Length: 389
Image (cartoon, rainbow, N blue to C red; front, side, top):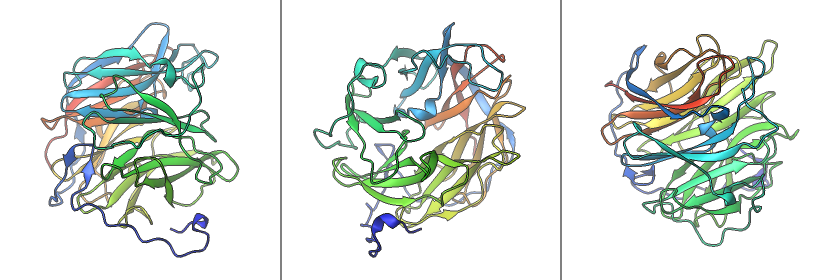
């Protein structure tokens, strides 16, 4: 898919990728044989663990912040706001009070958690300093590396970011992500590491009317000092196409899901699947991950499993309000039926998951949830077994 940003010149040819693609900072994947689809079932959930629940507070939206893992040590970011009773279809938080980033850490494979609020320099909207220029290149392969991007406005941004070299104990930043000549970039965290100084980042840009949004990918080859726009992931929609989440297959193929909405009437919410076989330069629309993601919609959390499958977790925002997963063994050309991770939600205000794969092959999915229409929202982790193909 072409872009006017190339100025009519021939598109630069992508540089060769490493023979083995570095994913999730430290894990090299090797080719596997495609396996048949997993059929619908209840997930083998070992336990549900409350990550953050505080009376009077709102915990939510981990998909906006990011998740990182180092063996059985897991760090996830989320929004810690203030609870307020509102109409049943809206988030039960007080928009007049500050929503601050926070981090939850598990050193037990997602089965126990501790929480701390983010340091002062990560609060750009509440007294922190604005983003500046990156002072030194990032080392994406550093063993303690973590990187988080956040926006100021969900329509036009701007986006700032921080990175850590000690597993999120301390953070450097904020640094400003460049506009790349786009109307605005409301950034959320999703990236693939290709090498020490090379990475792809998957973000959403404002549409031409400066409303959210249209997904794209960008590349750096020098540790984040310079970024190049690579491509749009799909055409500009009438509604929105936001929150891309991507994984890479061993042959370099990229598979990305995109949260979609068209206003209707009636409004339609779903999750698309796209694939790129040329390093993100062009994209092909595949089977939808979910033809219906419920009223309001939800993004997907994507994981590449050791047996060759891709697992996608998402929240379903119509009855029955729930957390679900689906699998693909053919790179997103087809998906299994829903696997239920968590039932019992009482309202659509849930989901926005993140997920990591433990060394023992179990998945830890983190999301926000509710157990009554007007109760405080809380973060929960499901530790579960994806089974075998």
